[in-house]
Amino acid sequence: MKLDNIAVDSMDLSYEIPTPGVSVCVFEEGISKMTNEKSGKTTLRLPLSIAEVVDGSEDNEGRKFSHFLPIQTVYGEKQLQGILSMVGLLESFTKKFAGEIDPLEEVFMVALQTRLTGKTIRVVHELRKDQKNKDQVNIIRFEKITNSGVGKPPLKPSEKKVKTQAENEDW
Image (cartoon, rainbow, N blue to C red; front, top):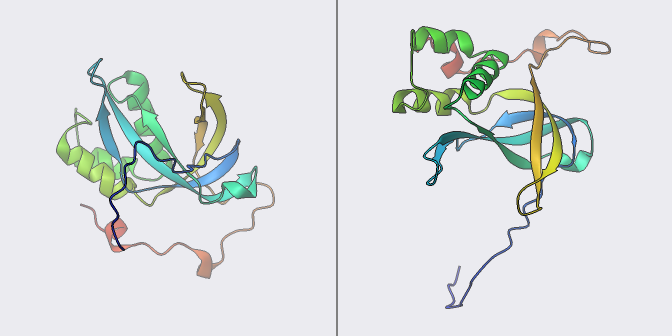
């Protein structure tokens, strides 16, 4: 790459948000805490990418968005516990972090970043307008992924998920 001396004031990255639908999403790297400078409140940013379209435009596949979880509220804590439960991590997290834990502590954040990344969850999403009238993804429901339901054949032995070394470890 050759670097040229150019003056740049802005750059459009052509970030494409998914259209409304139901998708199987993967938690991506980059789980982080974000603090609002004005209010001092902290939010967890959970980046997701669409691995499979269940209902909606096939163009959604591969698109990325984030869920912002208000972790310093009871509502945010319930969301995080629900997400951990749906992806199969709640039991190991409750063993590792018995009793009260501040979800903003570094040890908890590192565990969340390493264990949640790569997990899948079903997401029902739509669009909403932000304060600047730009379209934003609005997650209205998370669901556990199961292999049950109408039209779903049982898993064949070759289709069962092979556990990674991290999943086999008990911390």
